[in-house]
Image (cartoon, rainbow, N blue to C red; front, side):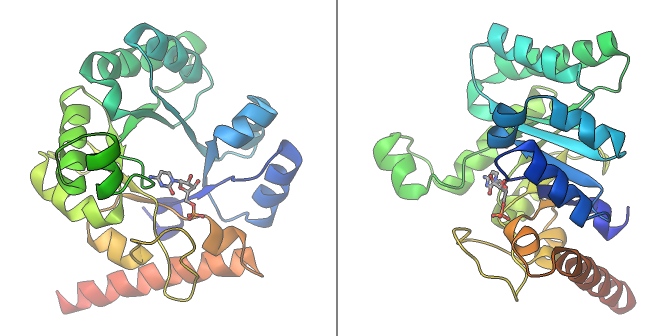
Amino acid sequence: MSENERIIVPLDVPDEAAAIALIEALPKVTFWKVGLELFVSSGPVILQALKDRNKRIFLDLKFHDIPNTMAGACRAAGRYGVDLLTVHAAAGSVALKAAQIAATEGAQQAGCAAPRVIAVTLLTSIDGLSLSLELQVPLAVKTYAQQMAQIAQNSGLGGVVCSPQEARLLKDSLTISEPDHFWLVCPGVRPTWATKGDQLRSLTPLQAIQAGADYLVIGRPITQADDPAAAFARICEEISEGMSGEESVG
Ligand code: C5P
């Protein structure tokens, strides 16, 4: 897989017109993320626009509900023919199993490939203090993320969304039999030359991949750059140079 295929760019824009403008400005991006704001604003029309352009789609709606409702939502999402779909691991194993089965059923009904359902371990907006004091969970953030990833894997899901800071721990602690079996998808990635913004515990794209990330979600360093296409190309180059340096050392 080439570097540009490992980078998922979020369409964090308010409406369809702004999304199409961004897609057109970044022709080399092959994998786009549609989140809650854009999906609630535009509806499925944005998914069709991406499919018309042969793009891969990460539908990041982070479902978290009772098993029957999760299954219904995932079945409907499966019919859109998206590639990746998110749920919250905290919904529990019964809901997670139902989610993957229903997403596959939905895709079969529509004659498309089944989406890979991946679970959010813990929102990066929840830190150790809110986890223990507000949510009253007596675990360190990393231990909690590890437990959520384990539930996701035991429930037959295809991966997790996690912080790149946790990628190494998850790669080492989960049984990942084949490379394609269980994906680690990591937001919270910042090149050295980009402002960190609210992503405080970030790694660079190369560091995140070296830590075990399979896919990187990188937004503002690309979308808010003066020249988004140049920023995307620079990130791809930095990963490729770092990886080839590693190979020649190894
Ligand atoms: O602009 P930036 O690179 O921070 O964008 C990261 C994207 O990943 C956003 O769409 C954000 O909602 C999403 N995300 C995140 N942290 C999570 C889950 C998703 O930043 N834990």
